[in-house]
Length: 510
Image (cartoon, rainbow, N blue to C red):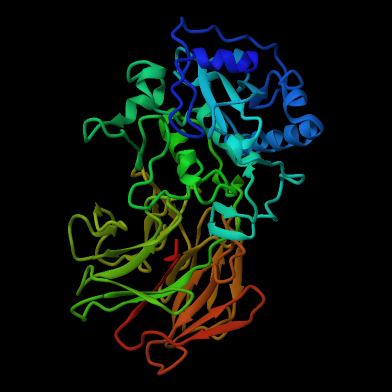
């Protein structure tokens, strides 16, 4: 065993699963090296070149370093700032990354060695990467900036490739996720409260893993510091335990919006969801709501034509859909303008509900991700107002008013430019041209001539390019009630629903 291996053996050997965070020895808190004033990366690989890669990976050492560099680049892009209190840290997390033989079945390990005392954020960390992928061998990607080899798309942020070798990029990215602070382990990191994230960890069931909850972000954790897969909702997440890749050891997982939400709400980092890589942008599908049927008032249509029925809401409610929890899948919701409280009720995938008191009589509901955090929030449109016809509600309850459209217009929302944030738009069926007008974040507008009288507007990403396009629904037709317009102007007709139904759109599949 190498000297590093012997050192790790002394660190209590608390490795019960692949990719588990490495416990740090009990010791006084380390002082953080003061860096001279200069531009440095947000994540600094402090021992690069003195990292054991040449001895362990031989001729593949340079390629392995390039893979780790890419993992660092991806985390840096996703976290523009750690927002440390001390300027002397230069917004830099110092990480030592070394290659060395680990225990059988273990691909990587990490520990947080030191935190900034005032903010309780990670400041120094150590990562170890196994010599042969925990026994499976390594896939050392010659082009780590793309994932073209991973042709089996499992979910938006997970794909697999043929073969048996473990993906070095995925393990490096995963361990860096622990280094930046996605962790939980009292026995390693001290009593709750040592790291800032511990303030938001709660045990609901003794001896089970804790639950992280803050500012609307919710995630179950395992006792060894991973995001737990509960009910299959997070089974494709980068920060699941490594053993979750069993049978899919060749899988690659990217940073997810949930990972960034935890870091933002657990530490106060500045995060950028628009920087996240994915295997494919998920396409939106259609659905419809009929308050007058007894069961399955919501009918959601998958791309293969199969349908999902949901019994929820009823007479007096207006349907909406959005990704309320940031898991990459849209759920349904409804708005009742006649109520004085909880006009919005959002339904989670497990059937639980969230009530939001917002808007009321005279308002038309919309939903969208206004701030790019990977979670949709509600909004409303009042065509009778002369200013601030659109009011968008943020997760913290603050509101954004937008003066746009008015009488005769029907609201929509979508990500028109692919920047990860939704903007507003409107449809006027009485116009002969530019029935759709889409508003960009800078106030500029795009006019689209499509549909007209008798049609109800919708919006969604029909082709998976990351940008939303418009569509329309006509309940009075006997076929082709839905018509989806691509960016090039081609139209895809779909026969679904009809009289008495109101359209919605969303990604129901993942």
